[in-house]
Figure 1 (cartoon, rainbow, N blue to C red):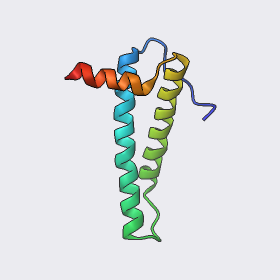
Figure 2: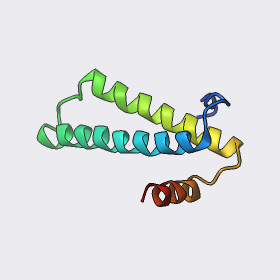
Figure 3: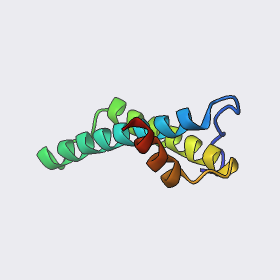
Figure 4: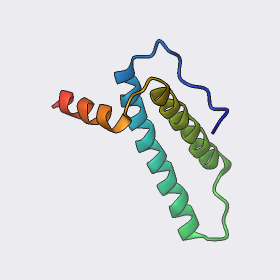
Length: 87
């Protein structure tokens, strides 16, 4: 999204990468909930708060990705480093 503002410059890159992974995990959980709702009743509409949660997580993910891009950070590489450092 072009109007998605980057994260504040004072946020540490490592913290940003960790947050990105948590956001991605949360987004997958919400997407799974949406899919379960649709499978159980294809005519049903997901509760507004579920759709809103997914949209907000998507915006947060885009903001983090935009910030990492601006900083010239490869998210995949940084994530691998983060995983290694936690071992």
